[in-house]
Image (tube, rainbow, N blue to C red; front, side, top):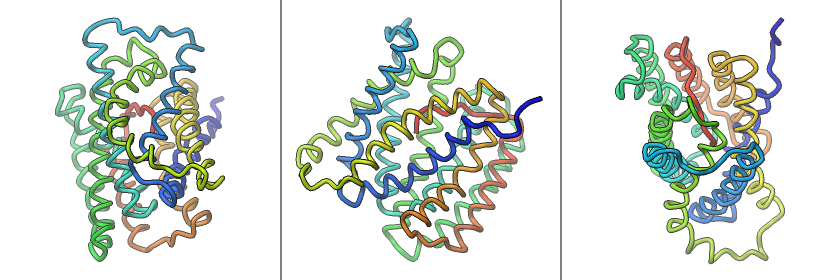
Length: 295
């Protein structure tokens, strides 16, 4: 009899949900540019070590393999991460987690656009419902111009992430996720090194608090690395379709973590928006699980 609850996927939910609070903590001492680069380097090293430990060759097997991996990293480890970090710096982690919950649904829509999947009305209707929930979140943010911009940046990041999944999806049939992520870091570094180098060189390392170091370790190794491994382990145990259901737990878990660790207030508009977004995502994702690489 199959287990009712999968331990690996619960670990994934907690680690990914905690990432929002960890990044907010990092922004207390570090700029978005410095966080971006300081998070990327340990994550890249982590995946190279994991891929080699698994006996994987990091050589590209074809020109398509090379350009898809590098482009995927350019988008997911580069552009997405910049938008996500900059957006979360301006808005709160509750809104960020809710908005990011739409990413699997965006992947479903883009998979139709790029002819990887057939058109389904439930995906389109689910997207419309989820966007209504995002509208509730944006409506609250309109009272604070900086927060509204942050919400838009996170939303744009979710769209870029979905596009990166579409780019790498054809390679997942023949290559392990750890190998592809390690190779994708090439594209990510092409963005992050010029983006974050100057700010990182200006960091006053002696003033960095232990909490900031802990948050950096968390977001780069635990959330950015270990959670990736537990996610795919969970998929291997219960299947991709059932594993996708666990992603619905990430936004409410992130909201609770932010509330108890950082004291972030839980707003009524956020709860309403969360319910609407999850309803749309659940409708659009009823029979489709989307592959999610590192976050």
